[in-house]
Length: 505
Image (cartoon, rainbow, N blue to C red; front, side, top):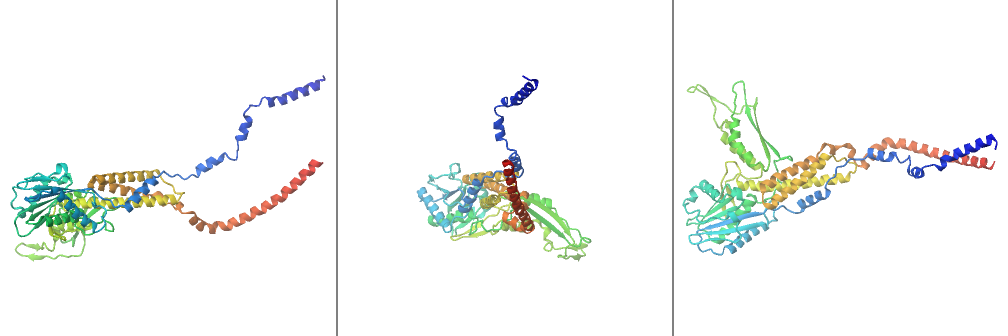
């Protein structure tokens, strides 16, 4: 074999060798590799809208529940008949009282925060010959017979008798509303509603009339707070969305170059305001501030007294010197803001009741009314706000949902569920605190700064705003693309014709 031939043969073998030694999966890798699709996941990830998951189903359930169904609390009532020797059928008497309460409730649909049919009535007969308790007793809250044997002048010492009943009943801890009916020989029947959770009726009254009066006290006073409508809907609530209230006191100081007036507001705060703030703590987070302002128009005038050797002002002209008068005016205004009257009598359909006042401005049964009504109001606002947030988020797919918003919604729902659980157990104070937290978190989530971005406008809005700018440019670009496409087809036909001609030659 010639030398050149052997060299050419060896080169052929070398050139063919790599073909037989190719890896077996090189072909499969080439089939799956597509350089055009590699940047697509990165591109999609870069333009992805971050949205923290929200519990839309739980939000819809809460919103629907609060809009369709009124929130009703369980209520425990207790009736004590003293010196009624002829009564023995206590169970039938309990049913009769419950029937009268249902009549008063059915006059209008049960408002949110009322008791509805979720009530229990316990009856006790405390007489010289009998001590009978009904079957629907309140356990440890049963009345101990003989506790009123030493009180002969009930009508003369309302405050003392009210405190004594509280020491016996302990209604602040047991949460039971009690009406004591004492059969005594006197011309007028007297009804007093204490500052805790009990009332008493004294006089020579029949059982039927006493039942009507006590049913009215239970429903109209203890449950509805002495208001005919008994509902929180549509009323002005002085508590903000965050559950906070600021009480601001100002002393107007006129002509400070002659006189400088001041007050001991610290004493007023510690003695008069601190009990009120503490009593309303379940309903609102109240803070107190004070200030002294100068250069106001003079509204009081003095006169010179030679004997005293000084100018004299009348206390009527300077009412801010009398802190007790100021506190009474302030307390009346505060009660009015919370929807409560400051009257000493309640005129009902069957009788007129005397209402005792509390040193802290609100009776225990009034605080219960406020707690129940604020619970309803807060949960209703919470459900409405979260429902609006849910619909807004679902209608705008490009809206960014921060993790903080997701946490606020989650905690708001948890607080709302806790409040509903406390409602079912009859814990009005705890339910008010939880509902206030639920509403505040819902409001914070809805008004989060990231929810107000301009980029969350709908596509139609963006198109209407930007189309006048981009439409003229887009038209020229489209015409240019069409022109280039026609030119490409012409050039492509020329290329194919040339290729066929070359193959033939």
